[in-house]
Amino acid sequence: MSTGFLSLIVMFATAFLGGIIASLSPCSIAMLPLMIGYVGGCSKETPIRTLFQLISFILGTAIVFTIIGIICAITGNVFASAFGGYFTLIMASLLLVIGLKITGILDFEIPVIIKSMPVNNTNSLFIYPLLLGIAFALAGTPCSTPILAGIMVFAAMGKNLLAATIMLFLFALGQGLILIIAGLFTSGLKNIKKFAQYSDLVIKISGWIIVLVALYLYYRVFSPLF
Image (cartoon, rainbow, N blue to C red; front, side, top):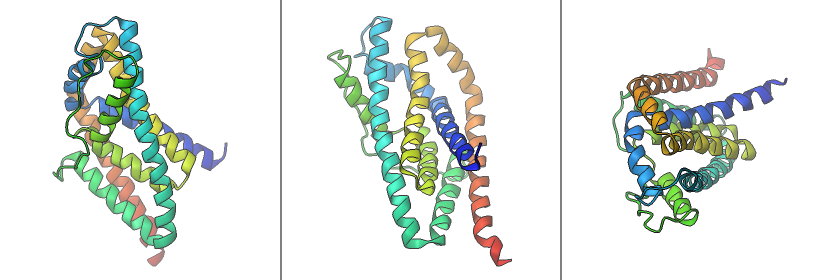
């Protein structure tokens, strides 16, 4: 197995795991009942109908994140060509800020495009949940946005269009997995809520990992000078 292929597998697994971690954060879990109400039209649905609506919702988020992945890869190629070695420094600095934000050392608001979402009053199986998924992906949450931003930076650094697209698609799937479990299984939702007390620690650990990656990139840039 080549090193390049192994690196891709690690990147894909990290993106999927990042989506799961983002969805398991305390504030994301607190939003789950509300989110399921939005998707299901705030009405009592059968499990199979709820499943179709949640899949449509996740497809909407996946569309947005996939487009973001494409943009990251394209801009990564452009900026890498324009700035050369400085591009790595810029990306390392972004990762450092993101990591410090996730750990809680830095506290700042990340702007969102959409601040509120319409309710699925029509109980639509596809169109409204899809549009809600798109709105949710554009709006983001205070918990998931920093992790998503870190994945976006990795996607831009890879400068591989297909790999970046798959990374952001897998992030969407990871984020949607918990939503499906919560929507279909009440007992599963209770177990997820129990895990929430530990998820803040997991998120902070992931933030420190991002900080270490940023420091490693700085080392790679400046080590030839010593």
